[in-house]
Length: 632
Image (cartoon, rainbow, N blue to C red; front, side):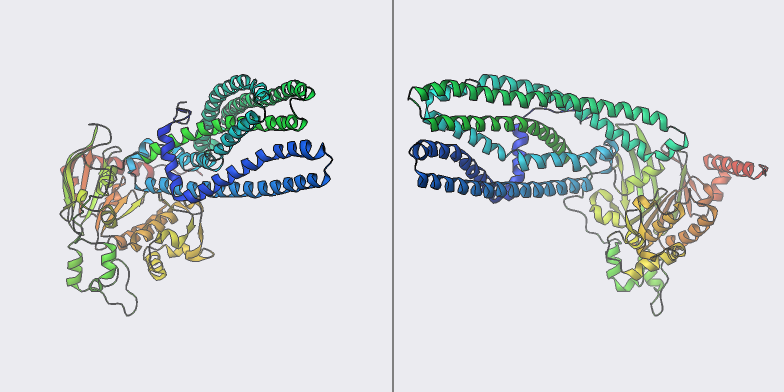
């Protein structure tokens, strides 16, 4: 399996780091405070061994108890100060890390909302979720415990080296004699941990991909009794992940004891050489004790810096993937200077008192109905024109070829054709999920590429076969965040007969909807989608196989709801079952991306062409189904 989860890139990339540090700019005062606390805390750590030296050489050797008490109080003050500075740096850095993580996630999600649909055709949802979750978490670790705290480690190392050289340069060189060993151990650790990290990330990607596919398709797994086979496959993947982590643990298990042994070796050398100096009177006992304590503190930052190398490596890989997403161009955008919109929009309709109540909704008591003049005015909008449209998802593999037709305001248009004929592509192009390759699509005489996306899509309501519902309430799924009043939501539900099942729910419109509407039937979800479309009061209604997956009783309700929904609106209905579009004003017949026939139902049958053959096939299937004897 080869995915970009496996790509680590450089251990350090200055370009990426500069871009990452840009997220620190809003929090420079916090970072400066944390850095000051880190440096102050490191300075206090450096002061402790020196106080020990003073206590031994100046007060213990002289038997000065009062002076020793002063040193003890100094130790207590240093410990208290160390606690305060450690608290400040930890709290502030974690605070900054959480704020940056919030900012980054919001930036990524905002970009995902703007990016065009074709990007999602090329990138699995699971991978995009990893960008928003796991990769951002890695960067949080970098900011909270990596990029800033490394300054504390460097400051501590430099401070210890300066103090040791100042106290006795000969003994300092003895202590530094083990540094080549430290360098070799660290290089070995970095090389092997890098490969181990890559392997672990690869297995994590395989686990995520396997779980997403098989948990999402669990019903199919259980239906075809594939549980043992899937368990065996997951066991192999999980075992690979476990073994990779165990190999990673091996390198850590070698590295930390090796560093510890090297530090003990340094202490032994200091005792051997420094003890001789003490016996010769060339070094005080307090200095020797301070050297030993400094050497113990010297190797701790080295271990921390080596550990932060892994964090930096992971952060570089995560940031590269995140920035690759953020740098993905938004191909479908509103024009810089969109055309002035004199067409229908929901906001305009609701603000215009001359248009009366929403179209398709029954007027309540006392509510004025529209006059014929007002209806005629409303019907002035909703004209759709395809002008020699060509489109291909890839290169010149044309899905639509030279398609031209016009839908007049208020007209009901059916679209039929075999699977892959290009029917659903019409929807994607009308709402500018994709742009045409050649030709133009116009709504009310305006090229849709010249219109603001929010205004264009505000003209449409789309009802799909696979209804997308969100976790929340019934009313929330009809309203979808718009400022619709409760009475408008209720009225839309009643108009499409969705109230028949809503009123049976414990809390009515406030009843909970599970993830993707899991607690609702297919027909109930479809009725909710009709209520949603009606509540938004669109000028143009698009139906894509809206009645193909429901039972007969629900289909009758839906057909009645469709009459309400289509009243006074330009309607385009895509259907496989020809019975659902026979009463349309006109029907378009597509075949292999071309518009082959146009006309009303009876006209198309009279031509005895593609539509006639489709009708005969479905009619024969229905007759064959009626003649099958029932066994019982």
